[in-house]
Amino acid sequence: MNHKMYTLLLVEDDASLGYLLSEYLKMKGMELIWVQKASEVIPLLEQRGFDLLILDVMMPEMDGFTLGAEIHQRYPEIPFLFLTAKSMKIDVLKGFSVGAVDYLKKPIDEEELVVRIETLLSRLGSQEPDEVSRTSLGRYVYDPQNQCLYLDKEELSLTTRENELLSYLVRHQNRLCSHSDILKRLWGRNDYFNRKSLNVFITRLRKLLEKDPELRIENVHGQGFILRMPVQPK
Image 1 (cartoon, helix red, strand yellow):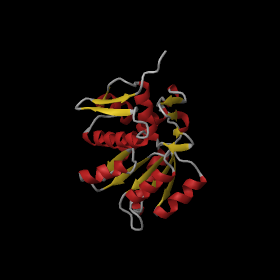
Image 2 (cartoon, helix red, strand yellow):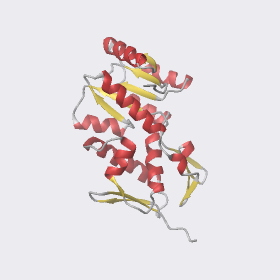
Image 3 (cartoon, rainbow, N blue to C red):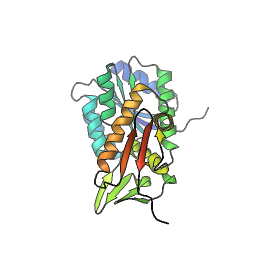
Image 4 (tube, one colour):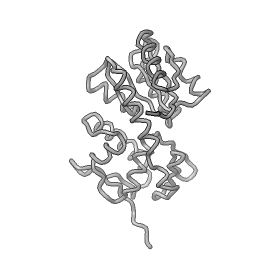
């Protein structure tokens, strides 16, 4: 099976695990840079692009959650996932809340990691934000290809996941989008933690759209969400 060449950045301070994962992913045809210090990440992101970042949570100088939050703020278009031995629900939800697109618990099964990476990146690459062209959303202008919302002269950057979700809601505006359909389409699976992650991103979009009271994302209890937009006169 031929795989698309992906460029990954692995941030793992454990030398044994870092070496094992980097060699295995390279063997699977992925281009990978492995660093052991969180302080090396931002300089690398300033120099080159990556398809995906894989971040360890427990690191000595800066934990992965803090690093992820900084990446999310400075490079919202770059997806990242966490590798961690922390398995409590609150830790998983914290990972999603800082912008992660996935969360894998240690010990890591190398084959599962490869499948998760390829599924995630193929899904991100096959999303359909370009099906929604630059369009007006009430007071906003939405540019999905550049992952931006514009409000007057203000530019609001969207993360990859925020852009996917908003694009999906816009394509289905004024219609119910079920939890199941959203999660299967954008996350690849419908489970408890992904539902919690979906709620986090819905909250973020509501915050971004709050300056136009006629735009609202309604929660239909137990079913899903509806992006309510004024119907344009014909």
